[in-house]
Amino acid sequence: MGPLVWLLIPLTAALGVGAWAWYVSRPHPMDVRTDVDRYNRLRASLGRGVAVGKRQCL
Image (tube, rainbow, N blue to C red):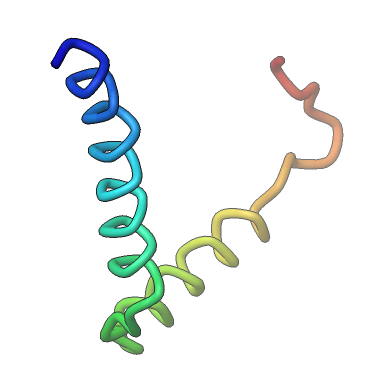
């Protein structure tokens, strides 16, 4: 009976991986407006950059 209990570990892992793969493969709804807003904020922040003549702090 002891060795059969050890088989529950890979079985549980396999079921977990299967559930995770199923969840990841499902198409998730996307909010286009949120994605566009996020892109615009990123573009604006990267567009600012470092002013000419100023040292960049690392």
